[in-house]
Figure (cartoon, one colour):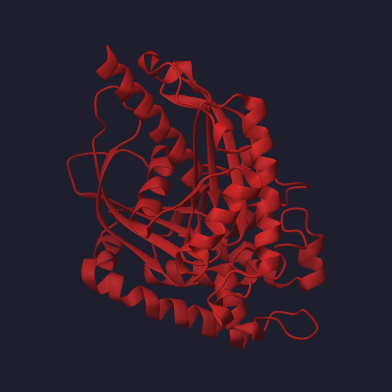
Amino acid sequence: MDRSDQPKHTRPGAGRAAHTYAAIDLGTNNCRLLVAKPDGDGFRVTDAFSRIVRLGEGLVATNRLSDLAMERTVEALRVCAGKVRRSGASRVRAVATEACRRAENGDEFVVRAFRESGIQLEIIETLEEAHLALTGCAPLYNAPADDNDSYALLFDIGGGSTQVTWLRLDQPSPGCAHPDFTVLGSVSLPCGVVTLSEKFEAVETADGEVSLDAYKRVCDHVGELLEPFEREYGIAAHVAAGRVQMVGTSGTVTTLTGVLLDLPRYNRARVDGRGLTFDEIIQGRNQLMALDRSGRAAHPCIGPQRADLVVVGCAVLNAICDAWPVGKLRVADRGLREGILHGLMRDADREAALAG
C-alpha cells in the first residue's frame, strides 16, 4: 500500500454513515487494529487484529528501537494494512505511543513503517494518548447520583508507560448515556510492563517462580512515582469520602480478570465492563503468582508472550490500588482504538455539517 493507495476521505458531506473506519494503536508491547462501521452514536466492529510485537524490547538499555523489534512490528503493520484495504475503510488513523516517543530512532521507524507497510503512523503526545483512552472508556462510568461532587480515575498500564487521568464527572448531556467529564489532571509515568521487566529482572527466579522481594520493590518504585500526582490533586481524600470511581484499561487488568474467572479462553464479552472488588483483584493476583512461568505460559488467558510481563503488571496495579483504595474498579477491554474511532466519526459529522 503506497501513498496513492491510502484510503481517501470520500463524500465529506454525508457524515459518519458514509464511511468505514479503522484505528491502529501501536504501543510498546502490542499492535492493535479495529475496523468498524457506525451504529447510532457508537459503532459495530467488523474486523480486529492484535499481535504482541514488543517494539520497546531493549529500549531501556539502548534508547533505540532494535532491528528485530522493528521487523516484527512492520510485519504486524502489513497485516493491518491488508485488513484496512480489504475493508474499504475511508477514514483511518494510526497512532504510536511511548516506545516511539522515547526512542532516538522513533521518527526513522515511522518513515520505515510507511515505506514497508503503507501505514502512516502518527507519534502522539501523552496528553492526547490519555484523552483518547478516556474517550474510549467514558461509557463505563456511572453518572453522579446527585449534585454532590463525583470524580473518577482512569489508568492504563502499557508496555512502556502507565497513564493515570483524574476526572470530575458531571450529569450527562441531553441524549447522552454516560456522564460528561472534565480532565483535572493527567500523568504519564515512565513505567510499563516491558520497561519494568527489563529494569527489575529479578522479579522471576531462575526457576520461573515469582520473587516476592523483587515484586515488592516494583510496587514501591511505582508507588513513589505516583506520589507527586497524589500530592498535587489530593485524590486520596476524595477516595476516603467515597466520591471516586475507578476504571482500569490494560492487558494486565483484562488478563487478571480472565484468570480470576477461570475462563477456558479469553472472552472479551465476559471481561469488558465487569466490576471487580479489590479483594477479587488480590485473589486473582495470588492465583497468578502461584504459577511458575511455564504455568503462566500454559494458561489460556496469559500465554507464552505475556508470561514474563503479567506479574510486573500486577505490581503496577497493586501500587495503584494501594495509593487510591477505592475498593472496586470497572475493567475496560477498550481504550485508544475506540477513542480514535469516535474521533474519526465526529470529524465526519463536523465536515458534513459544514458542507450542509
